[in-house]
Length: 127
Image (tube, rainbow, N blue to C red; front, side, top):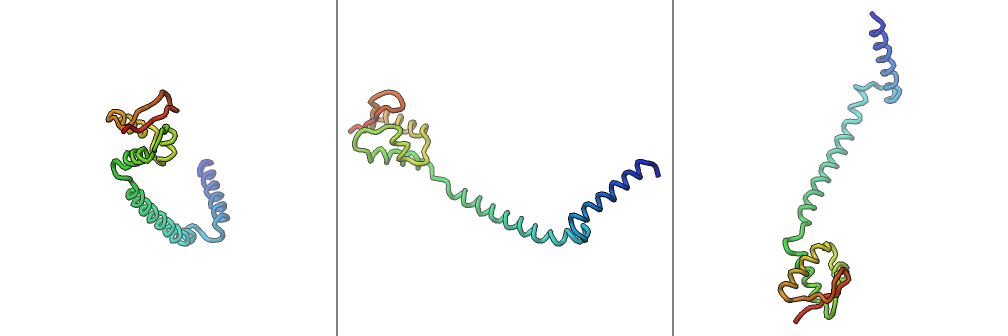
């Protein structure tokens, strides 16, 4: 036996000692079956919970055009002038770009008009 083999055997026995101290007096063959059932049960619970989460997320999507309808209904509820900030506050979950897109379309249709320039510009319904 050369010095490399002796060094390897020595390191391997040290590793066995350290692992036996960590696992107690039982060896790996006795330690693994005791943990495999609880670990597999935990993984099963997590996998099942994730599947349920995926189905809920899939159901939570809003139908096409729901945000546009929300913005239009909020605008319809205003009696006087309103700003982009008012719409953002009253239309939760709708982005500023989407609100601008709806306002632009309504302006082209002649339903609303912008009374100024910039982000604080007031808007007003026509007719």
